[in-house]
Length: 243
Ligand code: ADP
Ligand code: MG
Image 1 (tube, protein in one colour):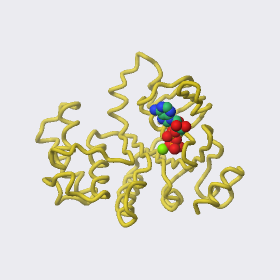
Image 2 (cartoon, helix red, strand yellow; image 1 turned 90 degrees about the vertical axis):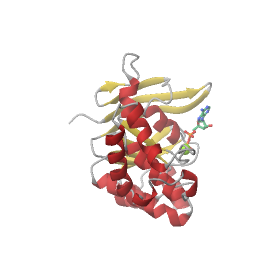
Image 3 (tube, helix red, strand yellow; image 1 turned 90 degrees about the horizontal axis):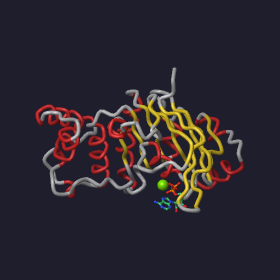
């Protein structure tokens, strides 16, 4: 089966700063890949390249058979298929939770308001927030905001979801609810790339764990291999610090 995401020799520089130094990664349909590694190693930059929020310096990224580095590729179609959730949720503060979720489907996918509202209610139930449709974003806790952000991304019916440290800004007691939503998504067969410091989540949910440092992928393996038998010294050193 063709890869859902195929990254080949990806390099990304900011000026003279070489951030990604030649990455190869293949993600299969329905696979959950967790990316771990020290701060500054290029994890966020890598995710941003995957939906072309950044221009690539060289190399290629093929998503569902479309080369996103090719100028002829319609990036809007690619981006509509890739949901992204960040550490900071960036909900629109002046409209309700429900309006946050239906905005993009109505504006970009030309869904009727009725269809979008129905889907938004289903998604709010999925993330455990059925009672918050009419709430103002600022009345929610961080964990609730992040679950709305996930529902908002899902409203575009993406078939790939990218998560960049979705629980890093949350109080500890909020983390579990957000991870539970992500676990369920994984079970339902979503293709996911998740940058996370939640090693428990990576162990339990990932099909594969990728260790990045200094702009390289140094190790890529099953959670059991990475956590129980890391091969690279940098991986060992990192895991010693975080586990
Ligand atoms: P990580 O997510 O692993 O912490 P990042 O991808 O955020 O790493 O950053 C990797 C490197 O890229 C850092 O040296 C950072 O300063 C640099 N960097 C990230 N984004 C930008 C940007 N927009 N402009 C210039 N340098 C950047
Ligand atoms: Mg980051």
